[in-house]
Length: 214
Image (cartoon, rainbow, N blue to C red; front, side, top):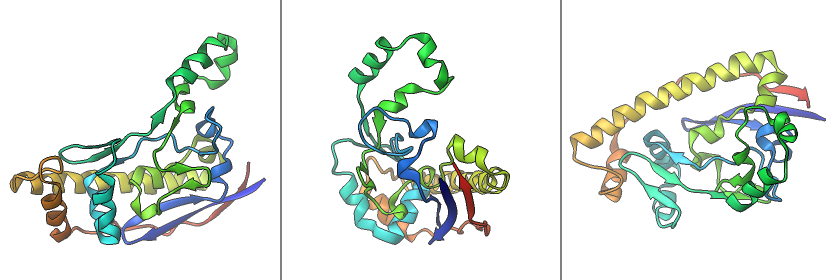
């Protein structure tokens, strides 16, 4: 089946868009939960640069997010717990022989029983500008093997953006420390403070769209 991947950027927030993500057949897309959730097994972690980008788009989202019972506010990031069906996972291991499991190699099969808090039967429930950057720039194994251009250019862009995020995170956390602020103890004040801080945007590359057959 012919599919495609493209690269889009809006207000310092990039995304790799795969046209058939919800019906993914890669190892990461395997799940035993009865829902087509693609690779959305990840439990989102919002770094300071993610929070900074979200403030520019939809600040109220952050204040609504922290009211959820599954959300943990740390000093300099926000963690959103998803679900893990431990009973189904244990049954999976009990009902399969070692030979049955060889096809998964060293892949962490517990991910087959996890799903993101934001996932729905129709896909992700939030705009990509409200997601952590790891979610938007994920490249599964199958995609990575499908195109030399993708492996070289998309992977390099992701690596460079991650390095940028790490640098900005260190800078923003130091600003907060210098002002005796943490997300955990002073959430509203910290968000308002971050809103006023100016940061340099990432210098994004222009990547070609890719069509491929999987």
